[in-house]
Amino acid sequence: MHDIQRDIEFECLNSIGNSFELESMISEVMITYYRQTKASYACYCTNQKRDNVLINIGTLYKAKFDRKRLQEKKCFAYTDNNFVVVILPLKIGYLTFVYENRKNDIDYLKFLINKFQHKINFAISACIGVLELENFNKELETKVQEAIKKISEHEKLLLVRSKNVVMGEMIEMIAHQWRQPVTTIGMISNNVILNMLLDELDQDTLQEDLEGINKQVKYLSDTIDDFRNFFKESKQEEKFILNDVIQNSISLLEKQFEKANIELTFENNCSNTILNTYKSELIQALINIISNAKEAFSDEIENKHLKICCNKDEKIAYITLSDNAGGIDDDVIDKVFEPYFSTKKQKNGTGLGLYVSKIIICEHLKGNLEVENINDGATFKITLPLEIKEK
Image (cartoon, rainbow, N blue to C red):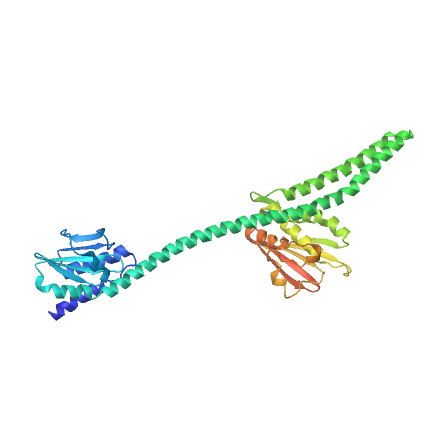
């Protein structure tokens, strides 16, 4: 008898906690108890205040008892004609087992079912914990997606803001670059008018003057095209020659460098290298970095220069921008790509240029951007993947 009892207890114990899904776990416990104790009916109700049977097995029997007893959280049993009913309150709901013609075993049945109440409750807590964790993970995933969306929107706003800042500088550059050709056109047209008044205008001179005006007009038109291409938003990837983009970026800023007495040179070792990415965003990043280098020079520095180099291997294009502006302080060099961090407080730096450039190059162009102090200045290193073979 004791061996049989131990076997029953072992099987009942072994059935608890084999699943982290509440219904599945309770089903296994209930079916095992039902078989091992030879019950005629068993069911699990999820609510102690009313009958809401989640699982049942055997010949249907509607147990009638005082529900207040469930609040005591203790196993109890009672007889109903030829039936013995054992009720086991649990952390969630309760189990009911019904036995026919087993009045003599009521204490044993109650003992056996009650013996593992604590372990069943512990298994229920584990199921609840797993469910809460799953729900938490779902909520966390939703929050992460929302956060990513907000970050993405914030980055777009920063890109726009950064581009607007550069736009203001570009307008100033346009005015500066147009001043000389407009003056030249004015001088040529005045000379034509003067020659007409003096009756000294001949066809060859007029043709030469008109060609000069056309040359200056073409320069003005080309300048507008350069700036228009910069402001054009890259909505999709496009193929372009890398050194052309670098040259265009330099051309937009070279007058500013001349005005600041800074020598700007370009060493091109990647001729005809083709990229397939967002062209105007790369131009924006280059302009941000080149402009940042210009602002880094103090008035005391002599022989100012910024050297831009382009190199490549089979898979990567490398662009380096090296200046002799004295470098970046060691205690802040790790912060230069952070938003709103600027070393140009006296020059009204926004702290967005390098941050936006980092986003563009690393996230949009799938490359990398880093900086280090070399010799007497700072060197920015851009790496970009070559997805297209050379022509």
